[in-house]
Length: 85
Picture (cartoon, rainbow, N blue to C red):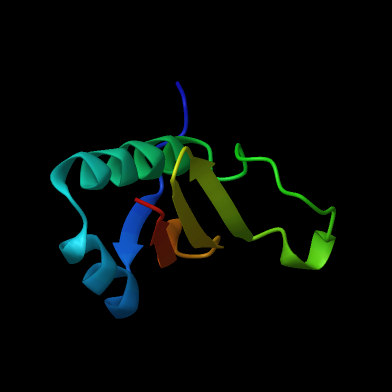
């Protein structure tokens, strides 16, 4: 049995960005977050900072999502969304 996915929470600033995105970009954000919820450390990072391993950056094309992994609450909090479209 695989572990349950992490719950996803969206911060207020990220929610404002999400609300302003075109529909296809919103779909991509949720696809990224579904993958992150299933495997929070699955997105490789540019550095090997062990102390910052719980803040992750996931990018797909023109879209990037920064999220924090809250291990005790088994959840992800979306900190920032950037759409270069």
